Length: 223
Image 1 (cartoon, rainbow, N blue to C red):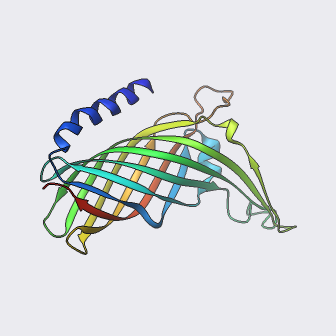
Image 2 (image 1 turned 60 degrees about the vertical axis):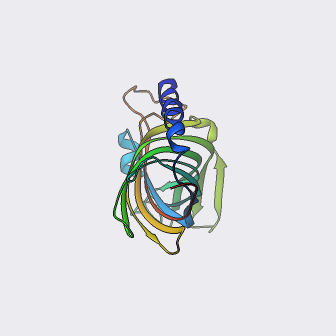
């Protein structure tokens, strides 16, 4: 984890000097609460019993245009990730209800962006992300009573998650300095997020979320 933090700041410092002479872009990410879908992986129990539920992502972005087709981008995002069991509970007991988990994260990705095109721009993002867990909530819906019960279970998970980010997208200008974008992005967590260890050391829980990000950005500064 310390090595990842060191690399992040080294890249940021090394590129800032070049970026100061170039054009900047600031914008909204997840404009209109863009959806995400999350899976948990690393052990058979979560992979077979917990399935993606709807979450959302939104925040702000800041980009340095280093060259004509290369940019460095960072973001400050609020991510709500969710998983749940089979809808309406086990198939043999459809009225028992359902169970799920909600993870609320603050996420900061550091991205290298390659872009192609003039007016309509296609781009790819590659980099790393770090996330801080604000809260994890377990919820249960009773099919008999119709009530939803929730429990704060944050202490069972590590506060820090980190991994690799990749994405593909398209950006379209709507005015001289305004751009709207659409990106499909995947965040692959590389670390076990469980605070409580399983009996077997081979059993871990890692995150993997897919985000459909709608963005609105404003260009400013020197070209």
